[in-house]
Image 1 (cartoon, helix red, strand yellow):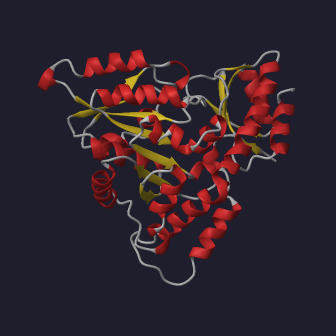
Image 2 (tube, rainbow, N blue to C red):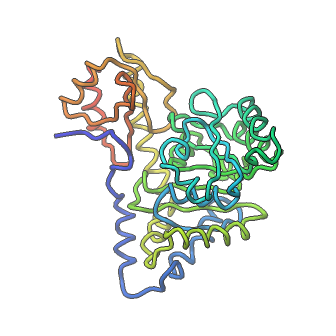
Amino acid sequence: MTANFRSDNESAVAGPVMEAIVAANEGAAHAYAEDDWSMRLDQAFSDLFETPTRVLPMATGTAANSIALATVTPPWGSVLCHRQAHVYSDESGAPEFYGHGLRLVPVDGALGRMSPDALAHAYAGCAGHGVHSYVPSAMTLTQSTESGTVYQPDDMAALNAQARGHGLATHLDGARFANAVVRLGCSPADTSWRAGVEMMSFGASKNGCMAAEALLFFGDERDSRYETAERMRKRGGHLFSKMRYVSAQLLAYINDGLWLELAGNANEQAARFAAMVARHAEAELEYPVEANEVFVRWSTDGFEALERAGIEFLTWPGQDDLGRFVFSHSTTAEDTDRLIAAMGG
């Protein structure tokens, strides 16, 4: 018997979400996102975010991120992102592909969070050679970050204000947005559009959905950007004929706070494990644990013993002494207890 902490992508679909898929499977429905479920998304997300919101449902976060950035970045433009950002290190060049050659520019910052000084330095470096340079066009942040940390709303607002002051469009990769909102205890609006975010990839697949993400547009340009992104979604092969099955998941996911309940369990189990690691005689936490990912620095012998005990996790590429443990909506207290016991906690 194994206990899986490899990724929240490997978790099962949450019960209410699966029920919504089954309920949507009754009879015929209009195709290509003209079904009743898809037509309800704008109002449902406008209510959730407390502002008029346009919604494009799609199946993957890579598509949502790439289409968003390509919508606001010309082929000769650049997108500033953290060095650990998923768009930079884990999407196989998809943003550049959708953007016909746009350039991703990595920006430094401790604990997975972009720093204002590094952002200023990167912007200056992009804009210094006139027609010979890529044109800085957008900035993307990640909430929660690839290090399992979160941005405080004020810090996010300062970065977005800095970016928009340079004329950059602002995007948020919210693959684990629910985990960040639970950690912060704030309104979804406070760590998105109120903090200066204009476009957002709203993640759901990591937190209980089957294959459901949404690209959200806030602010004065939401309609024109939506229309451009809608064309890109079709051209890129992400306009499903039976979109109702994606949209039904999203509606069930945000209904009655289910998305936060699911993320809350993931965060709670991660915190329990992190507390044990903090007391461990040999292992140590690589980053503060603020969401549902726990990075542990330990010996290769220790990690190999965990694997023999049936604990599945990810050894970080190129770093045999660094392991990542991801907790999901379906991680049980018994799963976490087994992990803690296997580490001698």
